[in-house]
Structures are given as structure tokens and as C-alpha cells.
Length: 212
Image (tube, rainbow, N blue to C red):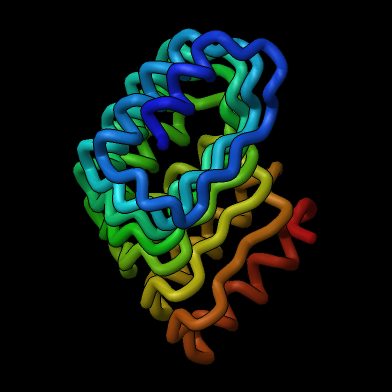
């Protein structure tokens, strides 16, 4: 089980990738893995998709991220961490110096969670990829993330699909794209952007030189 595996991780010195997608480890499993991550010095990729860890499990992993110096990719999609869990992860991102990719797809963090992430993006210098698909961030969340993109100079990939950001959110992101010089991929499909939002993005592309 996850607890036994976590104990092994504390001693293992070779494993670099661990995929526990769909194992339903729950909060207890997440807590055990978090403890292991504080001691482990080799794991680079951890995928915990579909594990029902919730806000408490996310908080435990966040504490581990403050101490861990090797993990580069963390997958937490479909875990119901919500805004509370997102806040905990954000606190970790403000001190963590190794995580490069974070997947929070379908965690219902809302605009509140987006605000927390925006704060982290303004100070974090290592995160390259952030997946927020289906997180219910809305136009309000898109606005704060857009402001963060004006300051952040490391993020290269940002997925915001299925978030109902609408033309207002698209307009805010378009303004950010005129200033941001590092983002290469921006996923915005299924957001109800309409012609006005699309026009704003098209105008931004005339000024932006990095989006691919």
C-alpha cells in the first residue's frame, strides 16, 4: 500500500519516477508519501492523479515541497484539493527551488485558488509548466493570473482551458501577452471567449514574440 511504499522511498536511492494514478491513496497515503519526500533525494517525478487526497493531502505534500530538493514534476489532477489545498501548495512554491511542472487540472480551486497561485508566480523562479484546466477560475481568476504573467519570467506553459474566463478574462490575458517575454504555450480552448476576446488575443500576438 501507499504507506509501505512511502517507507521504501525514505531509503531508496535510485527511483526517479513514481506513478500512482488511480490508486485512491487518500489523505493517509498522501501524508505518508509527504513524509518520505522530505527524506528522499532521488525522486524527480510523482504522479498522484485520481487519488482523493483532498485539501489535507495537498497540504501535507506542500510541506514536503518546502524541504524536498529533487522533485521536478508533480501531478495532482482530479484530487479535489480546492482553494484550501491550492493555498498550501502556493506557500510551498514560494520557497521551493526545484519543481518545474505542476498539474492541478480539475481541482476546483476557483478564483480564490487562482489568486494564491498568482502570488506564487510573482516570486517563483523555477516553475515552467502550470496546468489549471477545469479549475473553475472564471474571469476573476484569469485577471489575477494575467497580472502575474506581467511579472513572471520563467513560466513557459499555461493551460487554462474549460474555465469560463469569457471575453473579459481573455482580454486581461491579452494585455499580459503584450508584456510577457517567456510564455510559449497558452491553452484557452472551451472558455466562451467570443469574437471580442479573440480579437484582443489576436492583437496581442502582433506584439508578443515568444508564444508558439
